[in-house]
Length: 206
Image (tube, rainbow, N blue to C red; front, side):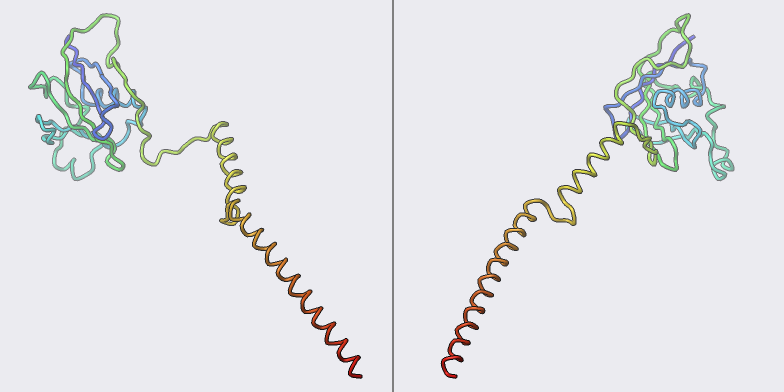
């Protein structure tokens, strides 16, 4: 049986590449699930392939978990659509949107038609380049290293910018305080001397 090899790239991250081998008799749902076995995204979200031209313009839609409006329109479902029924070009292109709630868009292109190899289980990922970006809203699971890093950053921040004033500003303020204290002491000393002189004159007059 013929094997279709598709190159899958993110529209916004074209340096991240997956090449997926599927049987010609597989469905679009098989391809959808194979893509996300390689990206490690949850496949159980509303998504669609679109038959595309050379400029990646969207044509007929093939959907998974479509909304009610699309169902009423009689949209083609991934699980019912075999790939070989939609391949008219040896370099066939599909525009693919994953997760309409928080979408990633992909370019999916047929790049080779091969012969099935015995002993291999399809679909399979024949090539993987780069790490898939985290899905929007994905939680970051803390690890020991990230905890230690966070503690260090907090410690440095408190030491360097406590109350919004850095060390250099603290030093300037301390010098200003010392100068003001010295000026104040000199002023008090002058006042005391003047007061003492007044007392002497008072005694002489008396």
